[in-house]
Length: 399
Image 1: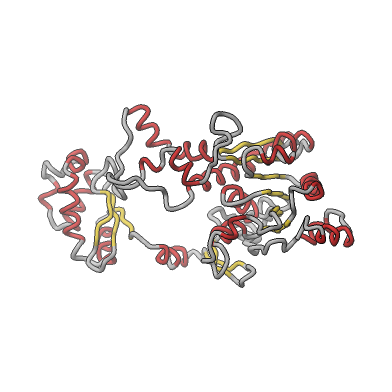
Image 2: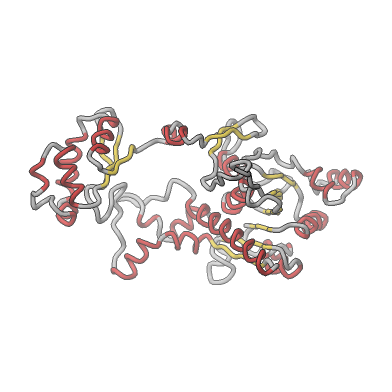
């Protein structure tokens, strides 16, 4: 079988980015073969570099979102720094930024300005709440947008709403930005023109709120917070096992309940019991339903519970920790782990979910860059001589 290049081989992306939303979007592009030039401030770079030191001394957010990029450290407050970025953008296919609302426009790096100057350029503005409206200039950190979008209101227990354990608003915006770039590249292949792309964190996460949002808008009330249980299906919850584990199971219809009662619970009489025979009855008697399921699984180890449930054809899963995920047998069997280079040595990383079996390589999976690691090479490529680069470095414009 002949091998193909990765889909974005030959595409150049310039990104003035920080934190998660834009960096995670451009990392997807880098994984698929694009060259991504990450523009960072000289005094510390992307502030996500300082979030923690959990990844062998590097910040876990930064390692996750920035592999495979080239780091250019340049001061955008200096006209010479802006000139360098504009020179790079003139030769780029894609530009992405997620600066504070209005900052890119003040620098002349907003999508509308850049696309007017470069008709083939695809320029992406990522913001918290969008370019207009009363929230346009409101600070938009991930947890704040999770609250504004209603996600926190439907997540947690009946007693306590909680935020998602991952930066859901950032990730939602990143994935729509990624998809927007791919769509714009397809359109450019047809029309020859790029254009601006606008993404807001609030609108991205509001789209993900589809089921509970429609439930509330059209049904009159929001779905109840039920922890890991399901608001309208029972049994559908995590149950403790004898070895301290937890196993989640889901009964989707009354046929499955019959099999669960007979083959796992050892209570065949519950199959036709009016309190349990239908999902409506089981939801109405949720406490009793959970009690009989919990009693049966409490005497089994997690492995025994999963084996019995699978033999009965009942959907189930272990309630894994992140350590469990890192050692997950399915990921190991499918060879989803790689090592990527970094300033502190090789780090374990997962292949991106989008893979192309006919490509010469599954994904680029390039190194996590040190701040300014590629400054000299990028400036030379942009046509600056050694004396010019030295003068910029002496002036603190680049590092």
